[in-house]
Length: 170
Ligand SMILES: [Zn+2]
Image 1 (cartoon, protein in one colour):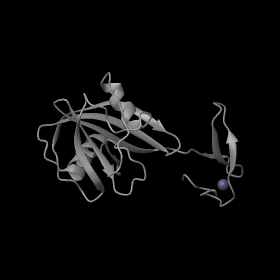
Image 2 (tube, helix red, strand yellow):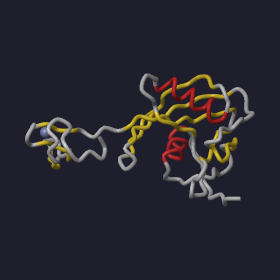
Image 3 (cartoon, rainbow, N blue to C red):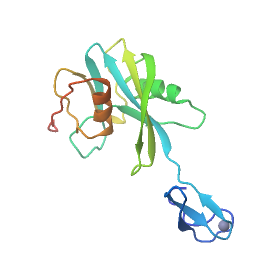
C-alpha cells in the first residue's frame, strides 16, 4: 500500500488527490476510489525496575544511542500481547503492571507507536540476537539517548527531570 502506484481494481496509474480535510492521498479517477495510506501499528515499552530503565541497542544501529524495546504488532495479536512478547523475546524478562500511556505518530516511518509502561521484577537480561546490547540505566543518571528520539520523548513524558548524554560506542 505504502508504495502503491497503480489501482488494485483497474490497474491504472494513481494520482494524488487533495481531500476536503487538506490531506493528500492516492486516488484512481477511473474508479473514483481513494487509497488511504495507513500506518503500521507498533509498540514501544518502557520497562522499569525500581529507579532503573531498560534500554537496548539493535544490531547494526549506525548511531551511538540507546532506545526502548519496540516491535511491530502482528495480525492476530493485541498491542498488550505484543508488548509482553517483545520484552520476553528481546531480553528474556517477564513484565507486570502493563499500561498503555499514549501513542506517537511517526509519519516518515509510517508508524503508529503505542507506548506502554511495564515493570520487571527481575533484572537479569538474556538478550536476543536482534540486540547488540541491553542494559539497565539509572533514571538519576543522564541516559545515552538522543533527546528528540521517540524513546527519549516517552521517558521524558513519564518521568520528570530526565537528562541525556551521548554515549560513545565501544
Ligand atoms: Zn481504478
